[in-house]
View 1 (cartoon, rainbow, N blue to C red):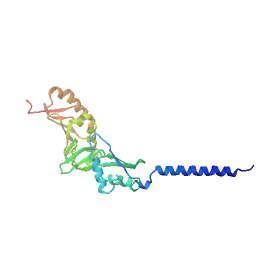
View 2: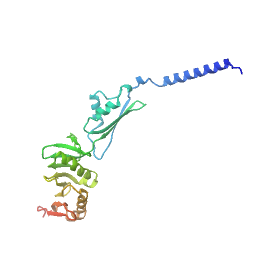
View 3: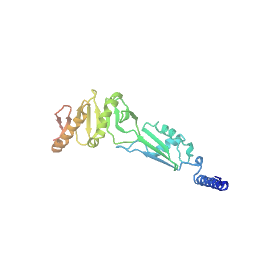
View 4: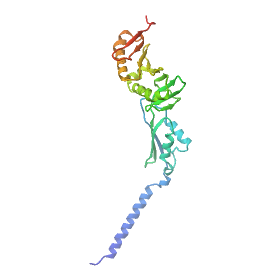
Length: 251
């Protein structure tokens, strides 16, 4: 069997030309990666029950300070890891994730640390606690958080106060009703409500859910009937009983 070399050569030439044209068109339509620049920075800050302490403008300022803000920068020069490491130095950031897209965007996703209580202790310390019991520095932002006062040291704040404050924070009723907790020298807790001229004593910080449930029922079925200012002291320290002291100012 003889080979038609002429026909074979023509087919081979056609394939070479087709391949060349395909590569040429692809190269023409795709810009050089070295020349690609970031055309948009998308900053997404995860929202929580309370507004956090960071804004998109502050993130931009923090990155500009370190010469890491990626807008208009060559994509090849942008390091997502360096941006993440810089942002996670902030005491208000729990986690930062940064990535580049093929369309030339740089996406920054921020998970903030969630403050659950503001501590203003008798020893003069002033700070926030997050959901993990870690301290956050005092901020210029004013958030509608419960304030904890009294005999609070770091161990009590981390192991006890965070747990109690988190329970209150994630209960809509108590989140709106309690404005202050006060820790006594023995570690027991009393709370100051938003409505009513009284102090509610919880006692030792155990069975908080049960104690608050009893207090809630007393509010609904008791104070709603006799008036919210009838008592100046309400104790739910002990199981199956509520101890009240009348408000002497109440006529």
